[in-house]
Image 1: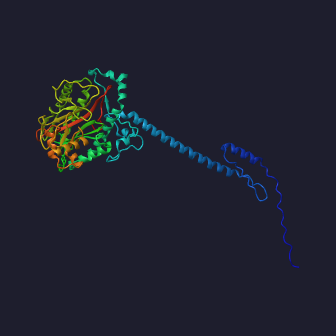
Image 2: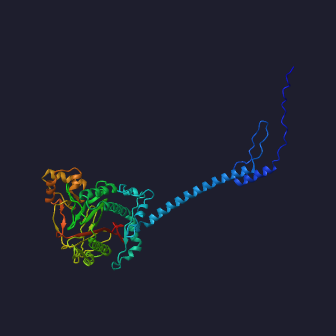
Image 3: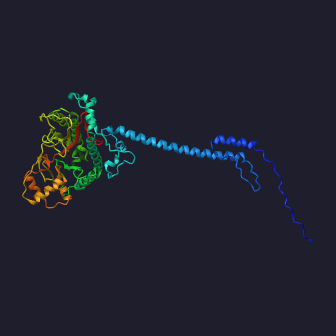
Length: 485
């Protein structure tokens, strides 16, 4: 018929085995260079069991280039991680070594922050407790000063016995340094708030709430040490607004901002003066220099009267010109610095700021508030204006009280303030009402002591600077020293 014969399938020609000698050599060479990388020759079995040919040299070079690029990326990433860790370690080391310097005039706020490690930067306004900024629990050392040669106390620096005493008191040191750091951070914040036009009550409440938050207020264990003093112009001390006061800070005011912090009853008492008009700058500089003189002269076995004489000499060497009239800056002779005890702001010793004071000596282990007041007025203060500050007498015994309301108020004072100073705003804050008669009764029987504002002659201006110092066995430490004053 017409059918054609179907085509025959021819078997593919048999190939001779490829010469793999060159490919094998290339594969061995590539294997050695890549140290354990995959074989460069891929042997895939075809349908008839034959092996594919060796990859071309260009493909091998491209593959090797990709692997080399990946290795370089990984090496660079490891190098960056290592450099970052080294930088963090260096920052922490610098913070550890720079803490004692930081409290002094050459201190750096960032160094104090780094002490706590990464993530230890304070917010603005401050809201992070200071203990969280220093998770290791070691707080910045204040400004350390050697005892003067006249005291014959320089040997204390190298005395192993005195160093051991300090090691035994490490917990005490750390508590007062924490309270000092709270003071520094709060006053840095409040200097931005204290501007002309601010309501004094609002400023004080912002300051006090910041202290409570940064120190993690715990009743009498930690918190505010005494009411915020914000005395204006001729009022030298002990004025804070009572509830409902509408006083507003003015451009020409001279305000003394005096507040305290405490942990475990260990009080940090420090104050500075705020003035916006530059004509008051010479007054502020005179008082600041006088306070630093008192700190420099203080030391173990130093007579308190000698410190007062040195302060007065420096203070009254200054003059200030106000509205065309020149005034000598005078030390206020009936205001003093004072020793500080646990839960006791005035512990018995007074540091005069004029010559002729008592000859009592300072002793090792004592805390002192070195404060000076310079005035363009008479240099003498008297009690005046409405009272806002009160404090339970430290050594008062049992006193019989007839008024039930007075007994109740005393229990409130004991529970909330103990022997720390308080003000009427603090009683308002904890919900007390209609307490003035009971408070007067406690004052009349001597359980509570009122502290009215202290005023120089009306029309004058008073400035104040104050630091808390600790007479350590090896040196004196200005605990509240900061970058600002």
